[in-house]
Image (tube, rainbow, N blue to C red; front, side, top):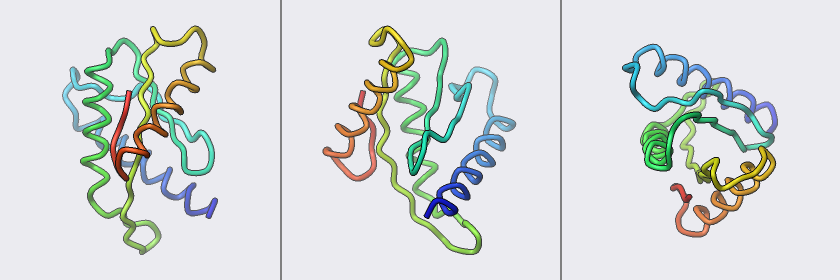
Length: 116
């Protein structure tokens, strides 16, 4: 499964790069995208508020409604997104912890969604 997770991450990077090239300059795009481990990924948005973060989460969920072609396999991907805003945290560790808590809250509500 780790190989598939890595391949999905590569596809996310490719989608993100293509989207960034096509997007208007003022659109809320992630500053950083990272693989946290297993099936968890992190997006860093600097200089954006909760409204912008939820807009990015909503757009990401919309993109994920389309099947992904990974090594000839069509995958249906769902995501539970946890959003934490920097004023909620004193450190990077706190920010990750708050986003993790929000992600589990999103998972409890429905299969694919986000929570702050």
